[in-house]
Amino acid sequence: MHSEAWTRLAFFGAAFLAMASWELLAPLRPSSVSKGRRWSINLSIVLTNTLVVRLLFPFAAVGVAWLAGEHGWGVLNNLALPFWLSFLGSVVALDLVVYLQHVLFHAVPAFWRLHMVHHADLDFDVTTGSRFHPLEILLSMLVKAGAVVLLGPPAAAVLAFEVLLNATSLFNHGNVRIPPAIDRLLRLVVVTPDMHRVHHSVVPVETNSNFGFNLPWWDRLLGTYRREPRAGHLGMTIGVRQFRDPAALTLPRLLALPFVGDIGSYAFGNAAAKGVDFDTGR
Image 1 (cartoon, rainbow, N blue to C red):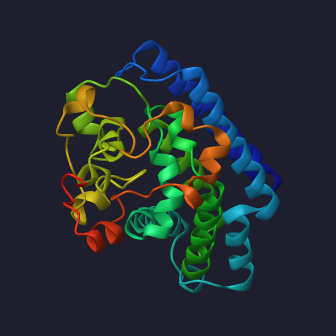
Image 2 (spheres, rainbow, N blue to C red):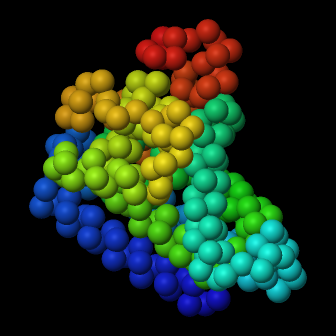
């Protein structure tokens, strides 16, 4: 169990350094606000989340998988499947759970309050991939733990999924330039930065598309895929409309945002209740 934390940290560090270097060498968009200030805030949130999760969930989802295996909980622990099939099936199933959770955090106004901390970033780069409110991280841990208990995946598959999810989240939030032909090929197997950047548009219909973090298939299969932003990747505006002042997006204010911030018209339920035009947010 102790090696789980170090394994995740090692892969996170390697992926972060790789993407940060790529952004330095081949950035797609210029920064609109101070990068040093944003990075200090975003990385402070990452550190806070790491401490909170390790304090409340010392063995994370991997520990739940080990416990489920010991007690025979979950579907896969009661089926005589080859290990490789249980492993691959678990990774794919857990990715679908994360996709559905992401949709839920956009659909329910109370959950969107937490998730808009992620979307309120005024730029889009590798640090955005780990910028989530601590309460959202805790809820996500509970969702994954519940999924693990029901599914009964091998602990090794859960660890692989967690490592893969962290790495792909850093990748698909990268401010990097990828040739269009290569991007089209990559989108067949993984969510690319150009695909996910659409999701960070201020336009609600674009914000509420491309929910995948790792596998790109769910958006295509379930009708939430959008190929490009209307204004193009260089012309689009990143963030949410109601939070445009960088001076107001300090660490304390971001942590308080779910409780005092205007949720706008992005959450499905809130937009429907107000009769808002979903395409424009007005």
